[in-house]
Image 1 (cartoon, rainbow, N blue to C red):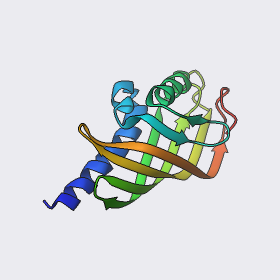
Image 2 (image 1 turned 180 degrees about the vertical axis):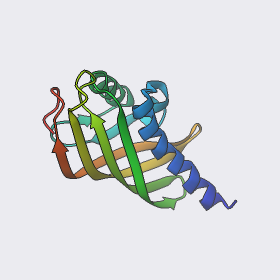
Image 3 (image 1 turned 60 degrees about the horizontal axis):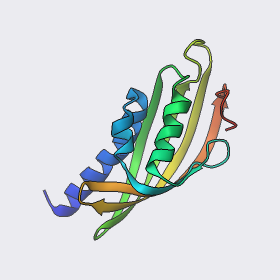
Length: 145
């Protein structure tokens, strides 16, 4: 496997760990994909986060009230330049926003624009911008998406 192919596979794995970390409520794994000083802007209603601990704490708290969630990622477009990379990934998230009410669902479609850096521990997301194209369904009580 060439270095570029391995880097693409490793970066894709980081992005997938984001989705599976949320869906499995694996907050240690979720925390591991970010640089400590990540700049992650999810926009209005979700927030702008300035550290891995801050975004992990928010996701832990906001998903605590939810039932099952499915964060599906696709169309991984990755560009690697030495120890830095950019990635645009499409996201389709289906969320049961109230674990006590199986009829409260939200469907979100958008994309993530990420900047990643190679660290001694592997690739990590240093910057994220989230673009939402469509949000339908019930909103979680703690978000104004």
